[in-house]
Length: 126
Picture 1: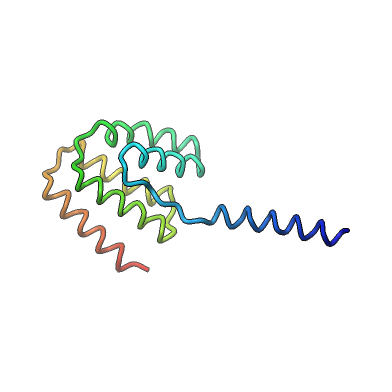
Picture 2 (picture 1 turned 135 degrees about the vertical axis):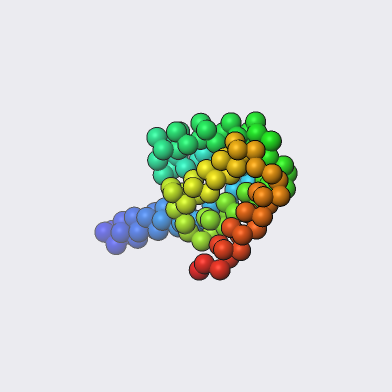
């Protein structure tokens, strides 16, 4: 009887661990991406997430990012998670850079060049 109990507890514990380790991926649809990022950040820190998402939501949902820029953000966000970088500060620093470029109205060519360099740099890091 005791060994059955241990097996059940071990099985539940293992399933919990495996479900929490599953890789997060973000949607490539604007509103769902924001929901995914919200959930991802809030799972780590609701207060930090709330503070960050208030600012990011305005830029992401109401800003003038092109579809190409959004596609780059989806890809880089998923790459950050795939490389097991941290939500705070790694993902948020990246998204803050996106917000800053949007708020400063950087030329689209500059933003695209920055993304290219950032992507190439992240691909070199292992």
